[in-house]
Length: 484
Ligand code: GLN
Image 1 (cartoon, rainbow, N blue to C red):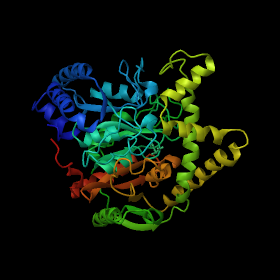
Image 2 (spheres, rainbow, N blue to C red):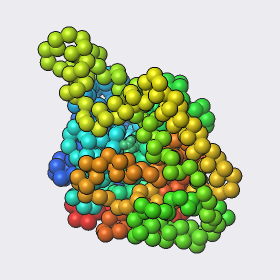
Image 3 (cartoon, rainbow, N blue to C red):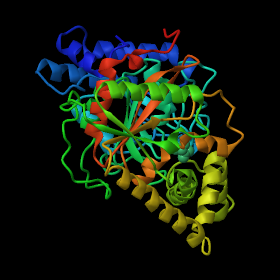
Image 4 (cartoon, rainbow, N blue to C red):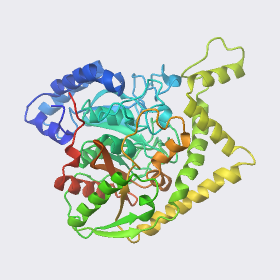
C-alpha cells in the first residue's frame, strides 16, 4: 500500500481495494514503527487523521471525484495548522498552536486529503541539510549517514521512506528541489504568487513559495491543482486562473527547445552528477526536443545577492518573535530589554542568529545602499538573463544540486560551503520563476536530480516535460535500499 502514488491510491479507494481509514492507519503504523530511524515527523496527528479519513470515506461513498479525497499527506511544519503545534523547526515555536489553518492547508482539507502530521525542517527553513532543526537532524532514507537536503528534508525523507505518499514543502532558495534531488523525488517550486503564502511562516517574503514533494510528476500536478489558488489574504497572490495541471501531462513535447546554461556545468559540479544530467538531456533529444546551449551570465552573482536579500528579509520577519506575544519566553526577565534579549538568545539557533545579524547589518543606515540596494540591482540582472533566455527557449535544464547527498557534519562548520549547495536553484527564486527537480539516476547508490526551469506560470509545461520523461524512463521508480 505504501509504495503507491496518489494517482494509484485515488483509483484503489474508488475500487474499494481499501478504505481511506485503512490506508491512513497503515501509514500511522509505519510512522510509529520506522520514523525513529529517520526523524522525519515532528508531530503526528493520529486522531485528526482518522477523523478526516472517516469523513473522506463518506465522501467517497457519495461519489466524490477529487483525486486527493481520502489520500493521506504530510505538511511541512512551516504551515500553520489549526489546533496543531506548528514549530517551524525552532525552540521559539515549540509551544505554538495556531488558531487557524494556512490557506494551502485549508485547500487540502477542502479536497478531502488526510493530514498524517507535521514534518521536520531546518529551523525557520534556513539550511540545505536539515541539520539545524531544534528537533534534531533528519536522515536520508537512501543512506542514513547522509543528509536528506534542506530545508524541506522532513518532507522529502517522509516521502522517500514511504511514510507519506506526498508532502507539502516550501522553497526560498532551493528547499523543495534540492531535497527532491537528494532523496530521489519530484519536487516543484511554483511561480512566485501562484500559491498563497498566508499561514506559511515567513522567512524571506519576496522569495518564499510553497510547493509539493511527490514520487511522480503526475502526483505533483494533482497536488498543485489543489495547492494553487488566488488568495485575497496574501497581497502577492496572483489572481490568475488555475489550469488543470493533469490535463496537459501527456502533451507532445517534440519540437520543444531546451536551453542548457553553460554556467550550470562548470567548476564545482561533481563529474558523475553532471554525467547523469547529460544523459537525461540526451533522453529529451530522443523525445524530439531541440537542445540549445545558452548563457545566464549573472549566475555567479546569485548566491551573494541571495545571502544579502534573504537575511535582510529574515531579520525583519523574525523581529516578531520577541517573547511577548507568542512563542518562547525566557524565565524571570529583569526588564523588557532582558526579556527580548534572552527570549531571542535562548530560543533561536546559531544559523538563524547568523542570518539575523547579517540582515540587520545589511539594512542599517549607511549600509543599505552598499548591500541591500546593490543586491536588488543584481537580482534585476539575474531576472533579465532569464527573460532573454526565454525569448529563445521553452524550458531550461541542468543539475539541481552539485552532488548527491553528503554526510552529516561535512559542511556544517563552513557556512559558505553549505550556501553553495543552492548555486543552481537560487536564481529561480530571485527571478520568481517556477522550477522542478526529477530523479535522473544514481551516483554512489544515491539519487541525483535534473532541474528544469520554466517561464512565469509555465508549471504545466514543466510537469508535462517531467511526466514525458517519467513515461519513458524508470529513475523515479527507484526506491531507497533496505526500505521496510
Ligand atoms: N538553503 C537556502 C538557505 O539556507 C534555501 C533555504 C530555503 O529554500 N528555504 O537559505
